[in-house]
Image 1 (cartoon, rainbow, N blue to C red):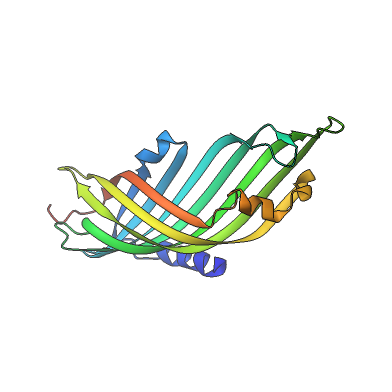
Image 2 (cartoon, rainbow, N blue to C red):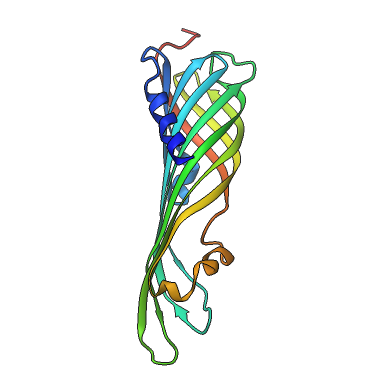
Length: 206
């Protein structure tokens, strides 16, 4: 699926340059350090395709497990999505209520993780990272203001298939199952977005 995802990205960027297109960002995600940027092409009044990427920077504290006390560590998540939308009864084209689907590629890394062995008191470092791909469903509503700006509310859910899981350093002691059991490897992609966007190109109401 990873190969088909990148082929789809190339296909979207090779679409005719005269098509209307939009740039958007997830205003709601910024509150949660979840930064997103999207590029959407309006093929006709009912159909659009888009590329959307999100990146998350954060840090966490793992719970104590197996007698080992963990300290704070860093986390980064990068997700890229290719979306398809169908709009019902648009007023100006590519607006109003919609349904659609998406393909995604995701990469996450937990780094700078340190724990102290309760027996000898020595600190140990490790990191864990993985990649995943998947498919999902989206629905929402896009509302244009009197200008070219718009608001888009979107909800969605997708299923992720992880691959290329790596435990480096002392992380091998915990084993791969530990990361599944404690939800560090996400199998579901839940989307709740409120985007602000801007359309470039001729508007049908003009």
